[in-house]
Image (cartoon, rainbow, N blue to C red):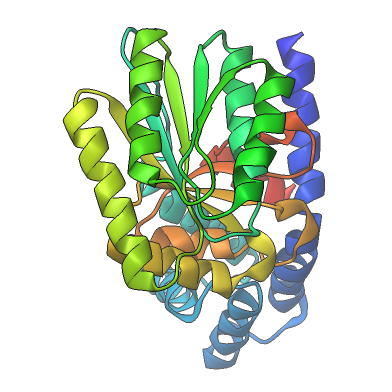
Length: 309
């Protein structure tokens, strides 16, 4: 049974990365097979291809710089060797940060979910809860996004569908109070995982930052021993805008990982490398579809292989 599930996910991943692959890898292969010799023109075109795939200028320059060094050190003359070297460089970037999530047994684990509205935050929370329910974990949700009545309503629908508990207050309530009660409920129920939704937009950036800091203080005080992840949900469709969002949140709080959604509907999958390389934020989960099973833990080797298959 598990083999079939794994195969299904690999197929979804390959299919989901098809647009990125068409833009990135097809152009790279064409450049290597039909382009100029290994010279400045080739490196310039190579860089342009990476930037077009939303690698980001700095990430693209690093990849090309490393490739240049490899060519020089190994005295590579054949362009055909570049593709395999390029593949290795991509893996090196993604493996530089620990992208594994291991829930600690016998204690409370907390996922603090951040990100702007409209990126698929609520749906991602439901998918995360579903994943861990499938593993036999006891999950509880807390809606600390009290600035939108719809946020609580949406989570309420998902909680009922998944048959799990949800802690929520009315619109305008103190988000930190929701987190406090969420922690107490999780502790009372001996839950394995508490997933906390947060507001994606307050009146100003300062308000947003201060609210997140207050929530973190409550977690420190009431569940200091809990294993914690602060996960930012990003929409791969918006490429560099996702990068900019992650940068703003990273400056405000300690973001431990990214949940990248909608990779199946974009050619901007190169943003994965920019987020890891330039911001130092590991990709922890990726989504390549709309069903509950279409969000999985990120596997760097699997991701790069899917791009090159």
